[in-house]
Structures are given as structure tokens and as C-alpha cells.
Amino acid sequence: MELDLKKFYKACNPSKTIVISNPVDRQYYIDFASVRGGKIIEELKENITFFSPNEPTCELFTGHIGCGKSTELLRLKAELEDDGYHVVYFESSQDLELSDVDIADVMLAIAHRVSESLDTLEKLELGEPQGLKKLLDEIAKVLQTDLEISAEASIPGLGEIKADKKDGVSVVALGIGKITAKAKDSPQLRNKLREHLKPRTTGILDAINGELLEPGIKKLKQRGKKGLVVIIDNLDRLENSQTSLTHNQAEYVFVERGEQLRQLKCHVVYTMPLSLRFSNDFTRLTQRFMSNPKVLPMVPVQQRDGSIHQQGMYLLKQMVMVRAYPYLLPEERLELSTKAFDSPETLERLCLISGGHVRELLMLLYDWIKKQRSLPLSRNILENVIKSRCNQMTLAITDDEWELLRQVAKNKQVRGDDGYRNLVHSRFVYEYSDGNGCWFDVNPLLAEAPEFTTF
Image (cartoon, rainbow, N blue to C red; front, side):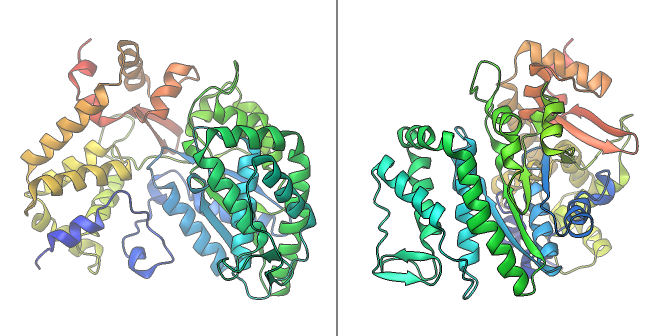
């Protein structure tokens, strides 16, 4: 069976998130739960649907950037929708400048996306959101921004906007959308908006809960829905910039203002920076949210003792080969691996060097196909791609960090000081999970660098 190189290349695009609800995407999904230390998405779902179906819940979800969190959250969305929930999923990076985020920014983004989503439901009348409209008017005056609110056209129960609106978009969704878009692009506007909103955070929360979430849930249940779930993705990408002498941005948002994040009157799932697990404030974080963050670890390619993790390697190979032959059975795909690669050992080398980081694996494969442009893919070209990627990564590593990496390789542990946190944040160190708990190891790309092996 011939392999279409262009289709294979397109299917390996590392920037493409698999959307489980899309039948075309679903064929590429590989479930790694059996080797990742637990059924994390099932746990998140049960916390909402089984343990607290009628009470608001707030969950934190974390893991290395690129390890597959978005794919799993979209799977959670699809399963919750199948179970009768209305789910609002959005990527916070579309509304927020992630190098400069405050709690009010997050609240406005949530209000924007929930309002926008509820607007898509025909005749879902929530009543006049007077508090939110008043807030928009105040912000408009502060920012000298024309939100174009008038009586020229109206949406029943959701306010009035000009005729140049998009069909079905409420004054709340339109107004907040304009504000967040302008603030995202302008540090000056963000600072001005923040000064106005910071002392009003409690009032903003009350308005979102009382005028949007609670009436929205009531109307949804009248339509047979079980409730409302909001999933905020990409907050794990908050940068480590300092917001004060004692806290970086992630600590400020999730620890200092975490109490407010969990006051929304609906089910909420936030992605959280992995580095917070190693913060001195981690205990305060768990107290704020009344639960431990759910962690999505790497797909294991090796055991703690360095031996090959056979099941993890098998699933990674399936992740590669399903992109070549999505319509074949798993074993049939692997039998055709030499159509894509010059030997089975070459495919194994690709999976091992990725360290089980799914996006890293796809990035390597994507670059490899682009360089070679023919099949089967050769081991020599792969080694060139590996060397190039390794050289890029080593440019950012200091002598002190190389020593820390050697300690991680030796002890399989990470401590909570800034040096180790930076290694995790930079994806120089990966986290894995097995029957004995979590453990850590050096990114295999770095483990082959001369600087690492030179003591």
C-alpha cells in the first residue's frame, strides 16, 4: 500500500490540535492514559458529573506545554456534551496578552466567551444584564472607547447594539470582546483598564455570576441541559515575569487571586503553569482551590532504570503510523512502517529521542519530512534533524543548569528551587508517572549533548 507523502506531512503538523468531536480528527487520536499513570480526563469528568453535578466545581489541569493537554481537554468537552452539559471551551491566548495578565482580564475573557456561547442558543433570554452593561459604560468612558451601544437594533433580553453587529451577538459579548481586543494590543490601555477594575473585582464577579452564569444555567436546565462547564485553556503559558518582589505572574494569578478564580458559579477547568507545582506557594495554591492539580505527564519511553517502556513506545509508534495509515488496524499500520521509514529501528529512534513529548515528536518528524521530501525517511536525515534541534536548545543552558541536569538524571527528582523550576518550564526536564508516583528525567535531546556528558 503506497503512502502519500504530502498527506502524511499534513497529518504530522505539530501546530494542529486534534478535535475529538471532528470525525476526521478523531481517527488520529491515541489514548495514552494506560501509560500516563491514570485516567486523568475521566477523573475531571467524574468530579463534575458524579460527585458535584449540581454544585460549582473548580479544577486545575497542568503538564508540559505541548504534551497534549488541549487535545485531552477537547476530549473532555466532547464527552461532557455527550453527557448533556453545555461546554464553553476557549484558548485564553486569544483574549489575553499572556505576558501581562491580571485577574480582571481573566474574568472579562470568561464573561465574553460565555456570553458569546449562550448567544448561539436560540431565544435564550437571560434578562437585562444591568450590572455588566453599567460596567461596559464605565470602561468605555475610562478608555474613551466607543462601544456603539444604541437602540438601532436589539437582541431580546440581552441589550441593544448597532445594526453593524454580527447576528446573534449580545451587547455583553460584543462590548467585552471589543475591550479585550483593544487591551490585548495596548499595554497603556491594559494598565488604564486595570486601575479601574482592580477595586471592582468583587462587583465584577457578582455581576458575572448573577447576570450571566446563574440565569444561564437556569435556562440551560429548562432546555434539558445538566449544567454549564467553562474550560479555559492556555493559561499554563503565563510567563514567569515578576509582578512583585515576591511573586511571578503565575503565582499572582493562581495563588494571590486564586480565591476569586474559584468563585464563579459554574463548573470551571483552568490550565495552570506546571512550574507552580514546584513553587514555595504550592500548599497555598491547593488550599485556595481545595484540590490538587491534575497533571498530564509525558508518555514514557523508558522506565526509571533506563530500560525501554514497551507499551509507551508502542503507543508512540501508533501515533506516528496512524498519521500515515489512519484507516488501517493498529497492527497493520506497524507492519507497513518500512513504507514510511528505512527501518523499524529508525522509527524507534524517533520515538525515543522525543522523550514521549508528543509535540516534540511531531516537530522532529515534520522537519524531517520537509528536509528529505521523499520516502522512506532515512536515519541519516533524522540524525541531522536531532543534532540541529539539540544545538538550538543548548544555546540557552548555563553551566549551573548543566550540573542540575546531571543531578536530575542521577536522582530522577526535581526540587522546588528556581533552578529546577526553570528546567521544567523550559522543557529541559520531563515529568513521568508510574505505579510509584511521579519521577523526572532529562530531555533525551539534551542527554546526548557533549556538554551533558562532560563531567
